[in-house]
Length: 397
Image 1 (cartoon, rainbow, N blue to C red):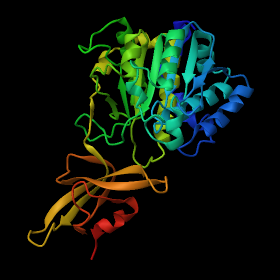
Image 2 (cartoon, one colour; image 1 turned 90 degrees about the horizontal axis):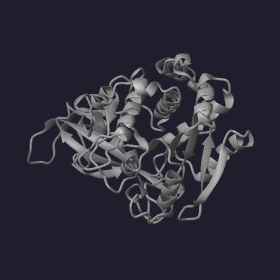
Image 3 (tube, one colour; image 1 turned 45 degrees about the vertical axis):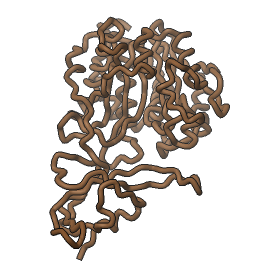
Image 4 (cartoon, rainbow, N blue to C red; image 1 turned 90 degrees about the vertical axis):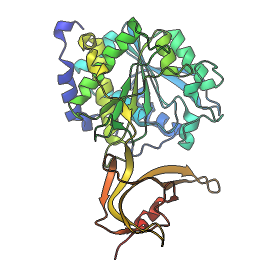
């Protein structure tokens, strides 16, 4: 598609954001799902001939790994998600994007992408981890630190795909914790972006500069909807990581880390942002608009800072023991899903992450204790207890 016929990508993004409900895949009801469910959701797209499916091999526990190719253009773009089994937000967004292409065959986005790009989509790279909704593979390995050794079958297959197709662009799709803030602001980081370094000195070359143009485009797209809530991931070079090495191997790569949002435990709003951001970015690549986005916009994004908790209870009273006076405190609580070794069920555990003056901290949820006393047996740093006991933390008269 020629540049002069292209619709400005910010206009495209606004349309997608407003019409998202019409193309999101309604079958997805939770961010926790297995490969069996993923394959069921993908099957209708296969029946309709949306993509070409290529069998790549098998995971450690012999689950099939497949590549889904859409479009016949010269520019190849590789998108891979869920290298960590419990990071599913972008996988949901990729299914939404498939649904958009299927239901909008004459849309300018669909036409531009299919004519100019060849999308190489590798969703749920770590299905064994997804089965348990845990980060690591069945071997207990973080495959995102296996780009050099290539010991895990999942890492070998991902590397083989990159080497065989030699894509010009790559989107490395992850979930970060929900407790990051944007720099020292009081804004939760809904997303973090990175054009990864390919060496320790963070050198610049054409490949990385192109990635910065694309990351700046992605940021500009989403700033329309979440101003001030986009951060930058730490750009320290990690020699074992896939993103850093894919950049080094010659594919202009953007890391997208899905963060948190208030009242969004299933990360469906973040899923929407991924869908809009990725679709619009693909359109910007197809129309070459990304080249004109100033990389200064990327350089100026604040880095992630951990100044957030899942829950902060403010203005409470704490009498730690019988020998001290009562103090005014805030208490920060974080929640984690932990597998019970006896039942193998996921249980939500609360941990006291911080205690004292938390006025510089932010949280996904905040509660005003209005002077109520804290239970000193629970209100201790690093104290853990079942999340359902959170109501017991305050002793109201």
